[in-house]
Image 1 (spheres, rainbow, N blue to C red):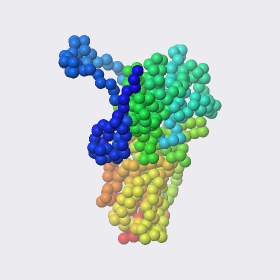
Image 2: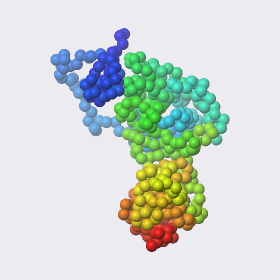
Image 3: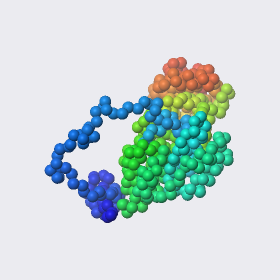
Image 4: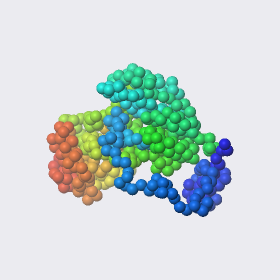
Length: 473
């Protein structure tokens, strides 16, 4: 059987070329030519003079909504046995669902998926009725089966949960091929219950000349896998690399082809791992799963606020407690400020977990409307626990922490600050206030300061006694 031909297509203008060139001669764009498979021409009805469809073909191609098979929402999904992963997926996996999991090298992608396999098998082992063994395909593209087994042994030795090695031996099947066509043949033959491809960049097809991991190979490999697993209803995880810019490697159309895109984030020097959903056809995209890196793997964080609060029920200078939303989950975190006399002509504004632009705006607002002499001071802001905050509801807590550090007066850490600060110095309302308020009270915080209690930042700082002498004049 003759091989299919390939051509190079410009991703900018769509022009086709028989060989690769650095610059497209049509639109003059650089490095936009990607190799694609050219399928053999098929004789169509139009070319053969047949423009009509038979009644059977009409019935197959035109489906009325009332004829669509309906499935109850509770029966559509099944759990991954990891609560934080289920939260981000929207409640669990769906038959035929294709999930792209990206993240930096060593962040814990393979660890998370290995834990998922073990906990799914443990859940089945504990079931009252003896269930048919699952068939899980693990495509070992980057690691050998012995390396993966070593990671599994680490789980079996150090994890609190006791996994069934018998269930594991019957269910887990390693696939060592890197040819996507061989993989698809095995999938069609064995029909696994779960497929994990680690990673998509390690697979290739012989119908393209590009190396595995190239843009053309990633798109073609993903397309072939997705077509097979969706036809068979096999839930699939595709592990993807990310570039130095922090985006998932491959063409952007790759993210459009899958059902869900997850990104596992975290600092290498910190234990916190955050699983975010960038796209989800079966759930919300604003959910976040939190994990803590342990010796044996990743542990779910049931009460994340405890991870970010250090000085509860104390009087501390330069620290304030804020409440922010990660998806539908309210989190309480401690923000810290350090304000010192500057030795530079232009004072520094440094943030760890806080955007620089936010620090500059808050400093300007406090200098203008509260008369704080921040033009002569360096301002350093940090979020406890290595967390990154992006929403505006933390403005009030950051401003109070800056004023506290400047004045040297302590703040009661039993108080939560919720509110956005406008350029006119006013305290503005924040969304989901009732949910934030309820979470703060549940954790024992008795005083909530927000738009409901104060209208502007100057009045609040004066009441708390945080205005400097220059601000009181």
